[in-house]
Image (cartoon, rainbow, N blue to C red; front, side, top):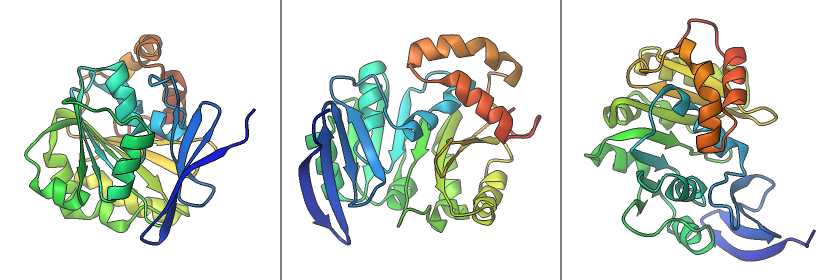
Length: 257
């Protein structure tokens, strides 16, 4: 195995933004041990970070999304994945930092062309002004390695839900320090989506993925096990493991399970 190489390093506000490469791995960090984004060179159909894969678990309850919003772009690995795996899908990625946007394009193969657009903008402003509707919104935003409280403010959640199609859903990445903080976020999301939600913990990580649906999913819970093999073949993701973990993380007949 080759030594890792530092490809890029630059200060951005109070963060040192770095891009590394080792063999076919390329990743982004903020001068700490937490990998913010990662791709495998030559494998655009693969998402090496477990969190990126878990954020797509809600697909098992719905049809293939036609339009996606990424709130918090990172290196754009998810956009790269969709552009290769499902080129018919359209998407918008919103990132506050111009430097991160540049890195996504220059180092992480953010897709160019008409299918995906990269917006340098505050996500709160984008959500408030947006006229587009989405089948899937992925919210992956942290401040000092913690999910900020404004993510679950009533107005922000209402704006997000208003952008969903009838069968659309939102995947939230929650980073919390304890159970009390987790319950605070869940207590805000639950009423905003009338309880049509479920949780998925990322094993061996702090992340909790919350999947919140605009309406009850068209694919009923009892039909999910029969879909898993086909989904794994189509998406290259471990849907069986996602489903089994959901059964552990959620009470039966709660949310969408």
